[in-house]
Image (cartoon, rainbow, N blue to C red; front, side, top):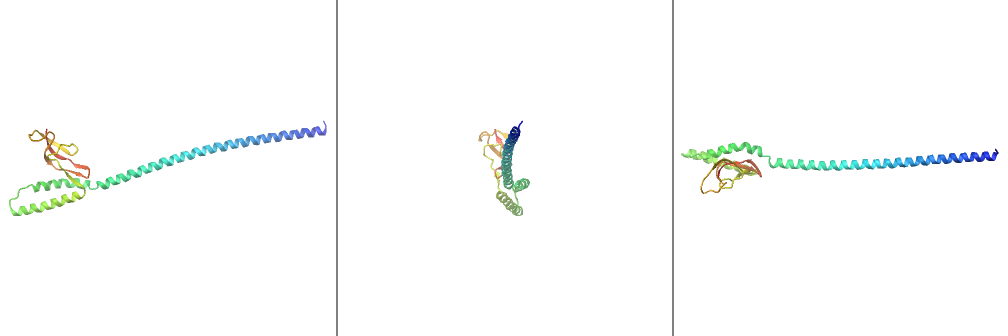
Length: 185
């Protein structure tokens, strides 16, 4: 073999090695590019998941805030309910005492004082939103009335409240105590 042939073979080998290295480098570049694209897709998925979690958490927080605000408004609106419920038996006793017949000036004076206290107590309850439930002569409403007796009397329509046995009260739009009534059949 001549020197020229050896050089040619060496040049061919060098070219082949260079081509192989170039192909390997190209394959590595393609692999890296595919890896980068896969990472990009992975990061996009993670970003979408994080955004979804954020939006859900934000909506959940807004719902929680609205619910707490509504509960606070309800608590504020009905804050006097426990006090009113506790005062109602005393108010009933006042009304029973006011129905006593007086025979002398001294008891009439005492009765007048009790009437004044009773009316001021009713005014204070009214200022808090307490209303007396009207019942006598009204149609029976199970949401407002509690029927404890049922009678058959002429002159009254069916299902009409004939007599109120105990007053009922509402606090704003909530029934605190239904009226105990006698109803016509």
